[in-house]
Length: 559
Ligand code: DON
Image (cartoon, rainbow, N blue to C red; front, side):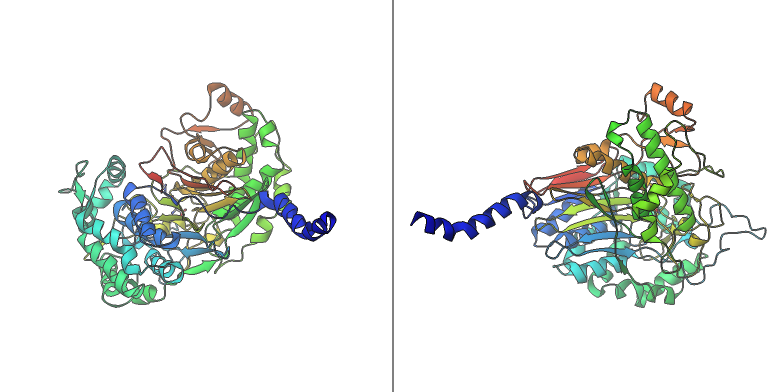
């Protein structure tokens, strides 16, 4: 009897054993809570509000993007664009919604050059000639319609209310407005909305944007057509052209969001999913990680470890300048650039005791705007999104009667081969200006995961975005949590200028000396940089964590 029972139970017992051994590789199911980290508390709260009303992470992403467009006018908005990386839990589907701005059709490679072929300073940064055709309104409508659960009207409601009632000026707003004061003063509508009697508003003063609220309502009711066609489109084109810009109604009507396959790679068993071209982020990130995989980083002492990471950065940024641009205009060897063998070749001339040299020389400045948010809902859906209008307050130009502050993303093109943009980035043919082309970006919304855990992360920071995400991933690979990813001291190298830029507390005196002895040029920065927003899910325990960069005023909230 006993033996018969055992025989009967054997298949069940076998299944149990298999499941037991597989358990570390199976997801524990769903997160114990939802988590949202954004650069502004009002955006984080709006995202949670939408989740509570039955929305999913994609609805929350639309709500958060729209609120950020209102409360961080210096960072992103309807007049700008961005990349939304999505993961759907039900079937594991992943996509990057490319809502990057496009050059108007009348743009051409010499748009910002004078008769002698020299770049005219400021022309690709200030005023409507600096503005690409916005992608954010189309992206919000697209994400809502294709992936969301709630009507766009409901999801945009928090942003509309805040645009109407106003939000309080904080210290970050004042820093950004101080930086761009002259440009904001130059344009009547921008000055009326974002300044007070032509000067800085007081901290705590309310910024109300009734015209932007009306524009958001058009989008809420009519979808993308509410922005890209009809009355609003006409107003946008008239306003831009009257102020010296080159947009046409066709430029707006022809704008399309593109869904692109994210770039993928791996590092120490972690699966990396990040932004594909026209962002350089994913490719550069994976090139750097592939190079670093050949070195046993934890076994290296400082500053040799820093040295090796810097050399990986240098090589990835050289390729960025040479190969990357809009994939609809140039052939990009994505597979080759993200292949471990290619990285092994790049790593071959890294000397352990001396710095390589970059060829050429440029100086640069950088900005502290753009925005990133990370979302995980209770079903395991996730969104990493980095959005921008480029420089603080974009081009500084608000189209009269619309409340829409335009980007100056045209500066992300290479205005002339080898001439650096505001982030000191150089480029060549692949990123030359052409009508209808998307400008190369560094924005790097990223997922990192293995069987046990998941990270959703990203940050603003111009050319330094990619190296910040790299340093965050290296922290994660060492077993540290999201608070360390967002707060760790940062350093950066971008091939040209040939220097290690670093935050005030990144290296000790003796580390600086050793790096110099290896031949590195050091560029200590006066201020910290970046504003990373990260979410973490331990798939085994279901536990969720989130962190907002202490350098910013954002909010990470688990609920
Ligand atoms: O797309 C890009 O790479 C830039 N427009 C991002 C600008 C940025 O992050 C500015 N912030 N510091």
